[in-house]
Image 1 (tube, helix red, strand yellow):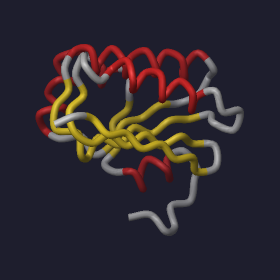
Image 2 (cartoon, rainbow, N blue to C red; image 1 turned 90 degrees about the horizontal axis):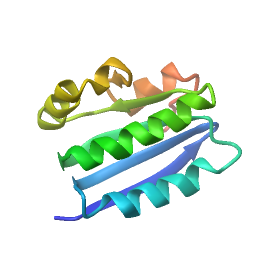
Image 3 (cartoon, helix red, strand yellow; image 1 turned 120 degrees about the vertical axis):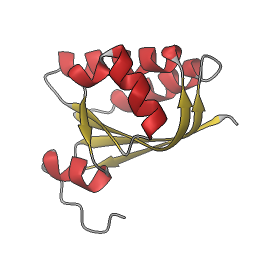
Length: 121
């Protein structure tokens, strides 16, 4: 199964929804697409929704870390939400949860960033 990505902007928050498998075959495309969205002047914070991500390898962690550093360098916040147990274990082992905050779901993440979640699932 390949990776599908969806990008949406709510106020000043870029929401990145990933579906499928994030491995070394998919990281180049994801990095490039994500980068284009981060160049949007209105975007400050990022929520990465991993609810439908079934697999991630170390190259996927690299993409996450790179985007996190970019967002943080601008004084903004990146959070992840809805992470499966398998991907949670990878984040834990890598130490990424020590720097990237985990939220229960997208609505909670939006609220934590000051965006009203009306109309969200």
